[in-house]
Structure formats: structure tokens, C-alpha cells
Length: 114
Image (cartoon, rainbow, N blue to C red; front, side):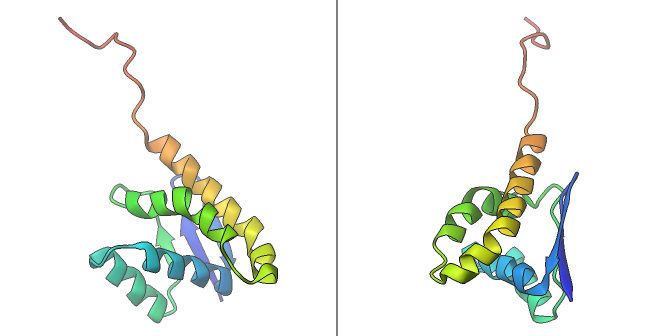
């Protein structure tokens, strides 16, 4: 079985062990609440699918973009870290792209009225 994490313009499809690792990472880094409960339920039911292209998923995108890269480097098992690093780095880059795409354009001053 594999898992899928979709963004607005990209999708990350991986085997279940890597996807479960990501789910565990997100669950362990989320504060208590409905999003953590939702991910826990998905994982417990072996539904390793996330759609992160929708508004309201910013906290998950932020975790993947900002926290996952450092977390990868802290994996104690060297073989596991080396095996997972390329795919998890790709996921983090997709999350970073999602964040960039979601930022509103800078106001060039042309829309200001005085």
C-alpha cells in the first residue's frame, strides 16, 4: 500500500512506510485538537492520504516545509535517515513551493488610493 500527499500543483506519492513516517511526524508536532485527531484517525484506519492544497491546511504545510528538514537530520538510525532523506526532502520542497504559491503578491503601491 502507498500513500499520497497532494498540494495545489504537486503530489507526493510514496510507499506506506515513508508516508506513515510523515503522518507520525505531523501527529507528534501538532497541538491537541481536531486536526491531530483527524490525522490520527486516518493513520489508524490506514488511509494515508492528505490534500494540502486547500485553505485551512497551512499548519500542516508549514510543518512539512519548516520543521521536516531538521527532523530528518535528527533520525538516529543512520540507514533509515539515508533511505528516507531523498523522498522526505522532496516532500519538504513541495511544501515550501506550496507556501510560496499561497503568499499574496506584494503590493506595488499602485493599488493605493489617497
